Image (cartoon, rainbow, N blue to C red; front, side):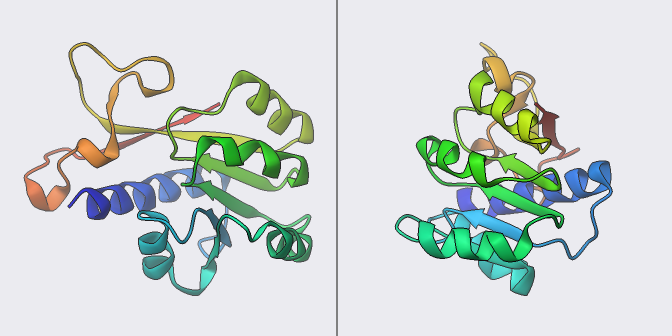
Amino acid sequence: MERDVTVKAVFQALDKIKSAEKLPAHVPVIVLGGDGFIGSELVKAGGEKFHSYDVGLEESFFVFFEKLRDKPVILLNVTKKEALSSYIPHLWPEAVLVNEVYPEPTEKEVASIKAIGACCYHIVGVKGRAWPGFPRGYAGGIPCCASFGPEDGGRGYEVLVKKL
């Protein structure tokens, strides 16, 4: 249940971001953590436009990255927070980084992404309230994995994304 709801939320977030950034529907999505609990399901559901990268595959990742250089691409972070900083120097202006990992990217990471000319989004969660509320990049939302999906009675199920 938790994985299914999160995967659906991530796809909804990607649709919002593609629309906001005017990206083509077939834009390649590179899934950092593509062999993990959430990532493996995203890659399976995403089909041929989703590319999986995981721990230990950095060399092949950078070779693949070179093929995409200067083209629109989404880099979807569903791995560990620590992994993000090693990929940032290899981004280019047409790249869009989407973070689904807790916590959100640091101010330093966001500044590095912006300096390259790329942009970064954070998946806040699903629109809702909690008491006490979630801090910082999660304010106004409920974590995707803790939410009720549309099939589970969630009414007005709306994923919140924040451009950082």
